[in-house]
Image (cartoon, rainbow, N blue to C red; front, side, top):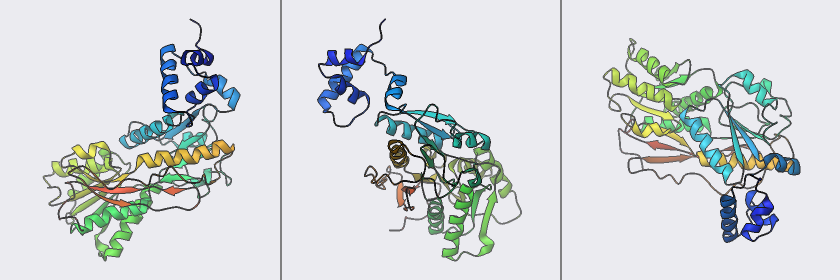
Length: 370
């Protein structure tokens, strides 16, 4: 069967070849009626984009790469979905790469390992140190995602980790908790920032240093949250009255350990996590968590990446101008959820995106402050 050409689609839809090209490329200035008519012809004729030919003509592939540590982890799966949906609205296809948090894999990506198939890279690093990043940045379009920092000269999009942790701990303090365990110190930049937010909240509240309890873990997984919490409960010291877990996987493990030990949540020990993965609404009890606005992260990071691609430049932090106008969540939740919003602006092309505290039964001891 002969390949359907753009000219065939134009004749079928009764429009010009340029109009078909505009629709296929996601060009915004096409009327909805024309776009619908052209899309119907594309579907009926079974037109397939020739990406190689488009790349040769434009110098662009139409692909961007998204590199994350683990696609099986709920947070990164949700982030990937948000990026894919935002990119689709721009007519861009996302190629997802899993690094496994391996430093050598992350170094290869930073050295341009994905640019043979993509116009730019959205990169959520886990172990990459700042020393591995050239002072001038990589020579291809790149935006860092998340809170792992590898240098202020690279554009980065994510929540303010310190502020998010501070918000979580302030909530536990407002519930009357005083012996709050910070569960998750592991030597990572994320862990350092969340521990800092924990310390800031306790210091501001005048909590005695003897009650500053930072518990290390080997990894941010359910298993380590479970085993570390069991060890904590079996210790000789007084029982903590709250756990601030540095991510939801740790928090879910902690909830299981508390349940197995006969400890009531939140009456005896309140629990808060970070990421607000879908599982939070279905744990026993439902888990309070910090919820980043993944849609804003996806849109803003693609804006920054598009600006670099259009300029034919590199990851040098050039400001692309206004974002899409979204300013994050409106603070609303389901009937069982209460929200507290937080956001901060970083300088240059990097941006701290909105987050909110979603309060559920795992920490709800007292009426929320008004």
